[in-house]
Length: 488
Image 1 (cartoon, rainbow, N blue to C red):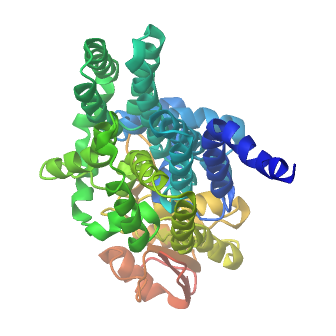
Image 2: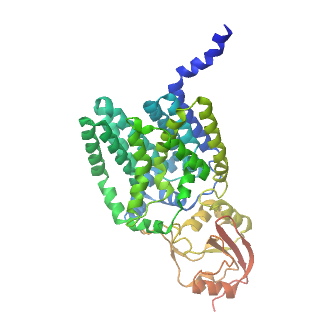
């Protein structure tokens, strides 16, 4: 009787294994994503989302005709979301959190469908626990949606395999279109599905794959054309040469954790399974494609490759499901411990790209006085893709009644179809009558005035003295004081 009672929890878990394989990863991803959701300050790309989504529709369309057309579907969706939920940091990031929690559910469902509930649950938990997943669950950018829809497209593709029902073809096409609308580069998932077609050798599957790809390309052709014409926007990426170990670390929160994930994936013997080649191509194909394209256009950024993480998690889940349960639990716990430092880091004020924009703005808020002015190093972010960062941060975080006057601004950000602001050329006239002045620069600068431009730097050095300097992570903030400036 006691033995029967003791086995009840085990039998219950076995009966509920299918449900646990999808529910637990989703809950874990949601919990981790919610922790300190609004604590990290917005970084440059998130400010691009905030600033663009808040534009009037007419100005938005004018902007997309010049820049960021490839992200316009996401920006337009966020415009509607902000109208409903507001533009607080947590509200801006909540859609990404929901998307990656749903992706974790799908990873568990895919693993269950391919390898059984035990492997599916492990894969989903691994995916949900990756620090890079939590990072992009807390980021107001479209990469979480690209990951969700690429995983959904794979789920729909596998549902076509048994009998090719029309509703799954339709769902597959819709998922592919949504993947492309989220991020065009994620459509390289089609290569992985092509590998699945090769292995399956089913005529209806091959026809459906070709038709789905062609339909998706047709629907997205205007967006693809606009992206090609604006391809110069990613020219800066080629200057970012990340070492291979950085990508490995992204898999597990540390280099050691990433190596462990790779080892688990390589020992999964997944190629013995009909879907093994598809998973392998999903994990390795897009990075290799982007590497091959690097002489023409460099796309090797971790955020562009977020959508391959479900494949790595599924491969590692398959590898962990093979040994005894105790060993699998031990490995998952080890990976979790290795990931803790990165989980803590991404939840700090500067956890997103090392830019603590809220702390920078708080420095100004605490020290500002009526009549203060502010100038920015407009050239500072030009080669780091974020020339708007400092202005947006002050506008977003500093209350209007504490915000210094933007002395040099002539045409605001994102006006007349242009992303960058236009500044006044007559520096002396702009500074006239201002006795206290804030200087905001990106990155650490021992001399906050160096490189501001000859005219501005000369005027500030001759008309003011430095009264204070602060170094919030990723910024330099200086306060200059003097008699009200007079043009010489």
